[in-house]
Length: 148
Image (cartoon, rainbow, N blue to C red; front, side, top):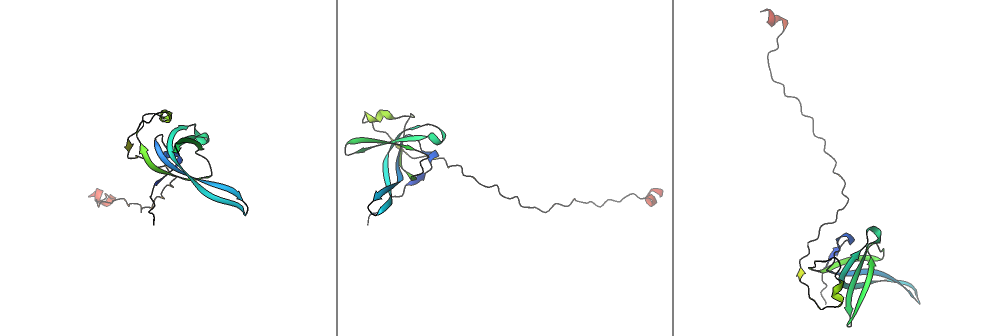
């Protein structure tokens, strides 16, 4: 049996330029028997990330049969099932499009991913018993003690 590798699953906010990723995208096909869904995996290097908010896109490049192929994925695309990190390369630029023309090698580094902020509900404060005031026993001056 072939042993499957385990890759770290990324959230769209964690994707950076220089990552080699695997994008799992659901594809719907029309067949003679009706509609069929399948998952297509596209593995390549993230060349650039552009845009802000819901319009944010990433360009992923791979070499297939000696031909460079680039695909632009919107990060908010609902058909993307998951994105996995294969390896992280050390880059000093936001756009590494110069790799299209050169055979320059990049050094692999260990990824330092920041955890994605998830919405956490505030814990309910436990009710602590109210502390009773400390009473010290002191003689209280009364009218009888004042007369003496």
